[in-house]
Image 1 (spheres, rainbow, N blue to C red):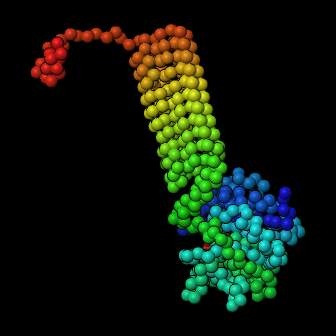
Image 2: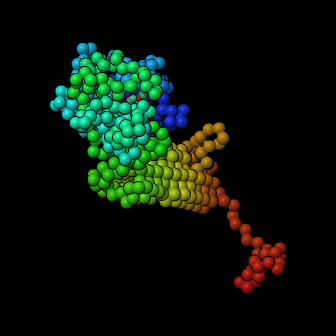
Amino acid sequence: MTDQNLAVIVLAAGQGTRMKSSRPKVLHSIAGRTLVGHVLSTARDLAPARVIAVVRHEREVVVSTISELMPDIVFVDQDEIPGTGRAVEIGISALPDGFDGDVVVVSGDVPLLDAPTLASLIAEHRAAHASATLLSAILDDATGYGRIVRDGAGVLDRIVEQKDATAAELAITEINSGTYVFSAAALREQLPLVGTGNAQGEKYLTDVVGLLRAAGSTVSALPVRDGWMVAGVNDRVQLAEASRRMNELIVRRWQLEGVTITDPATTWIDSDVVLAEDVEILPGTQLKGATLVQRGATVGPDTTLVDCEIGENATVKRTDATLAVIGAGASVGPFAYLRPGTYLGADGKIGTFVETKNSTIGVGSKVPHLSYIGDTTVGEQSNVGAGTITANYDGVTKSATVVGSHVRTGSHNVFVAPVTIGDGAYTGAGTVVRKDVPAGALAINVAPQRNMEGWVAANRAGTAAAKAAEDAQ
Ligand code: UD1
Ligand code: CA
């Protein structure tokens, strides 16, 4: 149910200089989702009356990415005055009319924070009738963060930024996470009073805390138990750290849901992947995008699946697959390459060193060895011989190959598309199938073999081959 007294402001206007990237920082991804995408998903779980995103740097791409994820979000543009304080000051202009509730402020670059932690921050804020309540963390290495300055009684006094801190303040290990709950009234009152007289010449949101305290309002900082949860991503090192941490959480969640994951350290699972009970994931496996793996299936080792669907009890080993659907009980790999539009029926097989693309291989049908199958439909219970290639491209157009049901094709065939091989047909080894094969026919077009007796003795006299031939006679 929507909390009519809650709004969320997501800060996403900054440039992210330390990423050294042409891509805006908040659009870098971990676990298959942008940083800001993780933040938006957490914001949505709070069911606020409104979510507002403050944008500026690379506005167009940031806006289009965010609005795809959350169509009803409201965008506001930060002006040339820099700083998180200015961002929020502009952000509150988009609060619902007459809104007098609480405003959660989160950064687009803090992806690991979860909704339960934010919900308890809001609950504490409301219970204390506070003007501002923020999440802090005690870190071994506080470098780069704003520090929480408490008074002699341990009460939050103000926040000092790294660049403005004295040596004594830099020694403080409690940091500001950049995640806050404010009463809307407090922000409206205090933000206009914040100046830019600091080391960075910016309007700091953190200054609101000191101003509120000086005005006698209730402000508090609540240390989060797990410091990693509020880690900000400012450079590529932190991006990789956040990525690993997020992956650990995802792996653990699926393990507790009944998935066997042999080696969490080398298994990477995106946020949107879905796994059923008794799935087994072997080392070196990456499950990406909207991949779905059904009960009892085994995936890996060394397998990458992007947007794939794997059926019950199927096996996918040492495979790279994108947009492929694998039927129940089917087997894929080792060393298979499945390109988009591959459909493998139940109990079917795509075997070793086989590449497929835009092809349907029916129930119980097999392409076991060394093949390229493109733009092809194979019926049920057929076997495509080892080393078969569909010649689907004549340099201008791509054409289709149709193989019927219960077909047996010989090894090392070429199917020159467009071509159809009828139900129950056979082809001989080495056939180049240029014409349709009727149902039940055997197609052969290899020239008859000629053996020229004594050719080696006559033409290769004195070689090891000639000696071996002589010995054999
Ligand atoms: C900020 C806090 C710091 C805290 C840290 C936690 C301030 C002044 N400092 O520092 O106390 O420890 O976060 O991660 O708030 N942004 C805007 N507009 C701007 C500037 C930034 O929207 O003008 C956005 C950024 O896109 C980012 C967020 O605000 O999502 C934080 O900005 P960033 O520059 O990363 O702040 P920090 O220096 O990390
Ligand atoms: Ca930051």
